[in-house]
Figure 1 (spheres, rainbow, N blue to C red):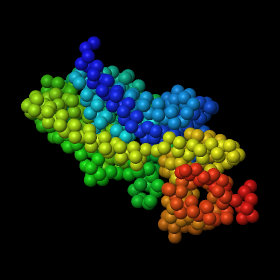
Figure 2: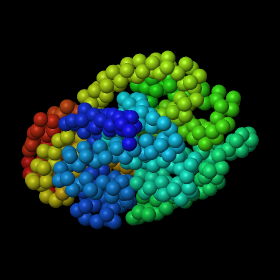
Figure 3: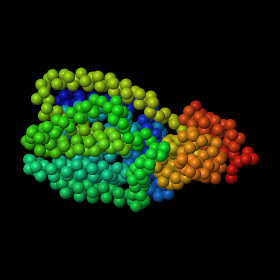
Figure 4: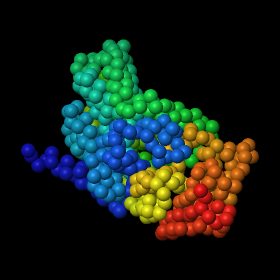
Length: 524
């Protein structure tokens, strides 16, 4: 093998490793703790036992099912590393390599030259997306499978599409609609090609077969898991109930990634890729109108389908949830090499390449700066809640409920200590769906609005107010409270100054309080 094709591959792998090393010693996302902890729970018990008693105030526990069951099964080998922090790190590197490999394989099987360089373009296109590509989360594998799915629909067999759709639903049921969207875009493009009478590639999966086989795969992935009916109900909560509650404009404590991204912020964070993407859409329309791809109908089908999927996820980013950005970028980047191969020679070749090189150089410097901001401001400490979790495991009774001031404390506590019980577990919508009254009582405390007392409705005047001490003991059944003073300063001061609580542990970032009765003795 010549050295020329090897160099881009080495550069690509080094870029992936550099992105992960730049995080060290931090970890990109707290959700990784939860996913590895859930995999560890399966390793300690049975992969078919999806009961989830660790979340006492969550519909996940009520249903006893696991939306990400297949993903957690995949993570089982990383639990053998013996360290939560290194399990998350090594697992995240593996997932990034799988996704990058899937993008590369998609381009290679479609005959794109310079596939490694185009994969690098995708990886480095948007700093905020790059940050999401170094996480230990199921969207990494779902996105990889969706990219491959489009390529096998364009050039492959129906059974390959079935397997990929099955894998997506099996690992990440709440995103099982994504392969249906990919198949829908592909079938729509093929139908339009037929209606217009333009040349078509006979090797692709027929449109009706594409929709049928992907639907079959999604159904199989849903059913090939423990408690599929209960899991389907959880998917309904995370998709339908979440959209319904977001439309109410109530101040629910959702993760930032579940909020829409404004056009201004999109332009600020993705200016170069947004400009390239808009240009690609315009060029694609012009090329299709002029018949530029009539001699390569397979490329046209892939190009238009990828841009349609990319557009759909861009709209989701702007109007629903910003975490759809990586799909917008991935499918948009997938279309670029097909346009470049056609348009670059017409624009002067060498001059265009020189200009592109200058723009890329500037983008890399800006992107490195933006990525550094994400590492400093967004990434989490690898020992988050570790000391607190070890203390609770050693000094509390198994099954004791621990109240934590923020919903995202659940993942690190659960990963380090599965002896205790906690609150919501993952997304707040699961806690809200379990009992809105208890959710709002938690909300006012968590948001540091009311600390000595809290309310069971929003707005507060529409419900009842209750003393916080009573809420903790009677409503949440807790004897222990974990708080981060820098995130909940008012709640921390309340716990410190009220005689109903006793400080039992103080670390650099957290504190643990014991809930006392009025006489000073712990509650029964």
